[in-house]
Image (cartoon, rainbow, N blue to C red):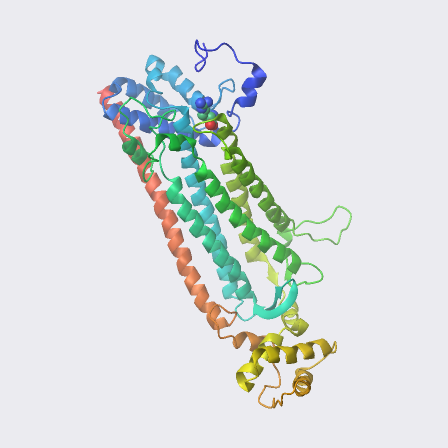
Length: 488
Ligand code: ARG
């Protein structure tokens, strides 16, 4: 007799069964499902709901379940597979396994356990990339490069300042994920199908045994909600979007036209017809994965849109998006970290690029205002007129002469004898006064702040992982105690 269908329903149409089953995607949930069953049974036994003997035989069969437990694909999902395994091992006693719980509370509990551990892995991988960015930035605080707006050379910056701009965004991604963790790490167990159970389950105790910080109180909310998945996916998406912009910048910088960087050979590919090609394929796939993760988020949001309360099998469809997204994201982060460490910055090209396109124009306009008290808009017009008349080859002395002439055209007498005879990207960068600018002094401050934030976040992630480990040792100990007690 079928474990689930019992005497209620006959055999299911095999195509319908395969179509509605999740067993082929459930493997990542197995470990969590075993732990949940164990915590539930420990708690029932401790509270005298299930006879210690029965509890002990269930717990020892759960303990013996191999991590690569072979799934019977004729059963719907991981939950039924674990129950069948226990029933086979523990005999009649196995029948108590599902007392006071349902697959509805069990599946979202398992998903929360998997989501929190994927989230911590993502945070670690982001921090590894942040560290790479800061390390490479530290070696390049003085290397000037062109900064762009509208993909037109705008103002000089430095390689360090540029790299740290990504680090800043990634640290906010960490903050977002850490905040999301608070809402992920809550237990639905004890909600059963949706309206709780007449079995006196200890929801808080089970939550603690599973390393949760608390419970989702309303039992209908607990089994229906998947906002924790959407929130995690959106955190993953925002991170991958940051990576996609970074990838795009580096792809452009490695183009023949820019030639600012050399991509490492071992992270590049070539063409099957054009032997000279070196393509930044890792970066291209990282850029594309933002589309994949946006897709997963969109699928998930569309599945929950307008879904009636409480549990519906529609929800099963989005379970695997958690690990699909985190797997792509973690690989992207780790590879991006390699790219950052191995990319060669071509100083000559970068410095030349930094000086191109009259990139110090804004600073000159500011100079006219600050030193000559010319209203900024007027100064902007004077320098703008110089920009439009600039020959293709010029020296800074030429610019000075043109500035005086243009100022005169616009009714301003200008004495530029105090303006240094060269004003270049290096002067520009060093003369920046505003905090957070490419000025190497600011960049060093920024690096210190970021290193501190990175360390704090790594400490937080370590603490969270430790508290999960601690809970799982307590669970193993309590379960062993029950087994030992019976064997005495
Ligand atoms: N496989 C299901 C899922 O992943 C488990 C819950 C099934 N519940 C039900 N009432 N059919 O969501």
